[in-house]
Length: 499
Image 1 (tube, rainbow, N blue to C red):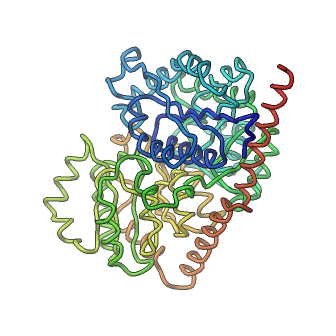
Image 2 (cartoon, helix red, strand yellow):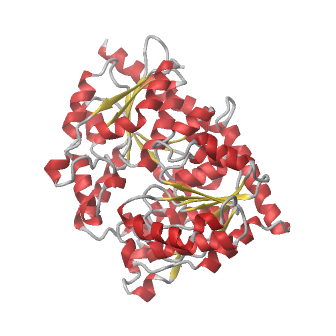
Image 3 (cartoon, rainbow, N blue to C red):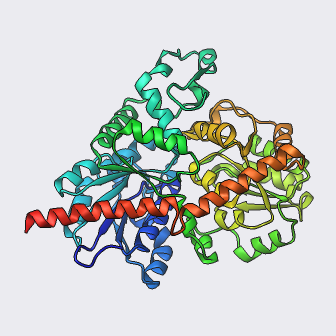
């Protein structure tokens, strides 16, 4: 794709969190397949996690490489080795993590100055606002990467402009009253409590960070989004109009994982042997298994996990349930043993402790539904697999994502959560969803009546649209071509001026 005279070199800087790194690495592979040199910059422990994927890409001939920046844990008071957001031990230390990120600017500039060929652009997560300044120093464009939907971005944009949510008082009753998000193609209601923290960041430090993010996006050359035109066409058009700058829609990037090994190695090392998992799924009827997973940052309290387990059991559907392991999981593990839960559900239920090969599991024909926390990566992976969703948003922009799934796409069933479980504050929240509600949501999703069949049909249709978007004649493939050509033109003009 890129000419030999002007070899393109994209530098990618993902936020050190699973939900941000995984799509950036997928995106890197897509660019590398178009003959663009791609350098991914991250910290040592995060580099170690993804080294196998990058090494295999290089062996296959893809021009990808991984460079490391030392993460200043000690300087900001973080435990040694705390280089990923999921390893931050408490909510009080999250700000320290972002201070450490801000300290990466100088070493990043030093790396950039040494790279050959010279970088053509920077594609960085929104949480690196300082990369806009770096890009100006190097006279190259900076693209903001958003790992969420156009729908969510437009909702956030319109709320920040209108400030309608700021008129809602902080009293608990007022925060649970819904209001209409202005300026959308559809009528969408939400409550203040369900808004992303970026809308009302409580600490002055986080308010400053989100302010810097917005300012840096104004000066950025463009925006790259992991979505596809056909999924949310009205919102693609309206968001591009609202931003008044170049916006590239190049997803779903997870579809670059075509081989079984790609799907196995994506993200952390899987906590289950893939053959064991696939053999278990092979014994199940098509579209019969519910897959339940709440993402890498989820820390639900033991009493809530118990309700989920009992609800899955009571639904009488086969299920795979991914549960997080760690210091706070011991109480729940004791319950599993005491109740004999795994023995009771043996053959019908499969528990995966830790990291699951999600794309591999979702692509199996036995999967008939996905109980998800509504993280954007998970929603897209469910969409690509053509399975309907049970929505259980937890925090961040996930309540917006739920609105898209339920009201716009109509490919899901709500479990009924109305308030968030803020990351790091899980202990402050009681049980939000009872066993019966989990059971009812599963039964509604898997229902074989007319409504259930229509929902499954829509999910399959959206899944086919997703696959077509990344094919040679697809919309996302075309958008990526336009983006590469745009940067190639800039490189050519820059070299012409210098010559």
